[in-house]
Length: 421
Image (tube, rainbow, N blue to C red):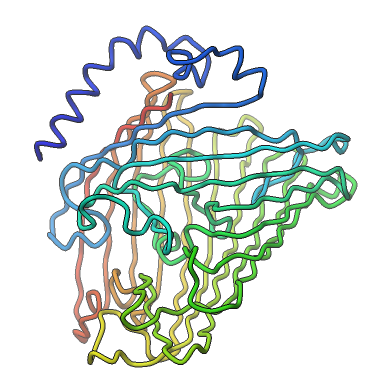
């Protein structure tokens, strides 16, 4: 374990006694140590902190999904003024009559750690050492407004985590019970800058709770885009009135490309030096079902498909993962989650994913099959510990190396701990 890892673990151990003493206090109690809690409550502002770290070991040394050894995933602080609304941007609608009053809110999230999805043109080069694996970032900074129009409408403006895909960015469950990410997540957008309009459809509750999203954003993970055409986000969500069945149909379309010698926007590196746009699309279909009334069982199915138009060859003679021909990727994953006790949950996942064109510059080219077994234990309401075992079988090449017929197996064990304050 590195010296930095040892220092962080010692700090955690030093913090455990006061955390135990405070465990009975309400969620979000951390800010009581610094400010007047009643003042924050009067303004309806929530403050929360999260710390996540883990340890991973695999038998191959390929490190295709994460680095071996200790990882500081995140230390983050969230400051939020939530909306009074029955519809959430990029999420589901709730039953009940439309709220009659206008409202507004905001969210600011600050993070330090390895869970870093860069926003090009903003925090992609933050830090004194750009090569250091722990990064400082602001994953979200946004304003939200609610209007009593239709079944209830919310407008979200700023930088926000992508609503397209089954797995969110936060280490929370739902939607993400696993420590390791699926390839469906790795191949999708992470952050957007722009606007997202979400509205609950004014239908009778017996037909289910329907909501739609429509957004214009600066492409994938961009503040400074390389073309003057925004990308379009569209989604349709359906939730049963008893909240035991959820369906998401989400998509993003737009022109996305890098510029040679200016921006190398990974992981999909397609160059366009004459200003023409290179079309990229991504679709996600997700289904979640709780078959029993007490929600002890949960089934999750997610399917994705993406495509990137090929671009120009590099002027310098080559670039790792450069897309010069039209490329596509697609796959599906299924998960079964069982709540064994109130403080113990078992989860299994299977994934099949195809990227024969090598579109992703940092992942294995070919077909991947993955099996994951995970246990989530809450020894305290504010602490989650997750041991996880993952097996991957690759049929194809590694990275951008075209090694015909190469096969590889990888068995990976990891354990992570997350503190919710």
